[in-house]
Length: 276
Ligand code: PEP
Ligand code: MN
Image (cartoon, rainbow, N blue to C red; front, top):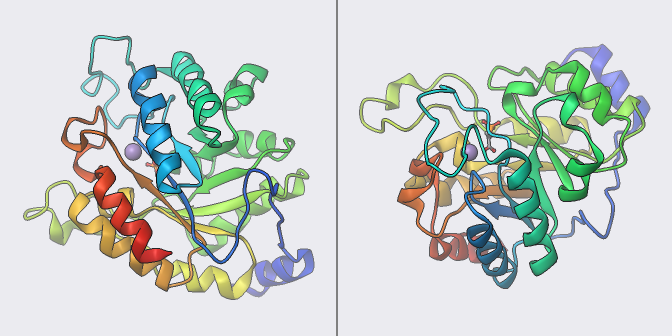
């Protein structure tokens, strides 16, 4: 870490206190879970109830989905085109209303910051692809809403802190960093084809040494393979993460996106028991 960033971190005392009613960290890991994508109203509302019952803190569900292949991944016949988009947000709002759980969902562009969007999302997720979308980060800095900033798959420690700073200087201090795996895992792919990223566990103690920003670990995208999600969840908490964001689904193999990494309710329950 260069001296300049360290001074910034110290000077600002990047001590953020997130809204207690929506984002409260205690000694228990803050667990966010739900499907990669919102697939239907029925599905997300039903899953929200199950998440609530399990003691999950917040429900995730992607409405705007940045797909690697925008055409090839255009699946389903119910209007799903890189997510259910506005309709998906309305379904998330219904899920919040029914379950009382706060909603975590991604927005991909500053243009998507509208009253309608913010009515449906409690914690705005910045996806890995937008980690250095400075226009978006600057606009999010003007809001008073928690931001879950996912690390770019290429992001250095300076780039992580710089992106956080960009949101903080706007006046929004409710930022958490989400580590979700980085480039560099080709040695596994011939045996485990869905593995795309390398878990970035060492960044947890590294960031903890420098600042007091909550760290949420994503064992789903960082492994890409459901069988590895429990082990990496436990490892992240052991390494000092404040919480986890885990993709779960009523029928994991049938998930509309990221099916290989989705876990069942049962597995999620086991993880919750092992980290709490
Ligand atoms: C997601 O959370 O579903 C997602 C797209 O994550 P990432 O931006 O880390 O790829
Ligand atoms: Mn996903």
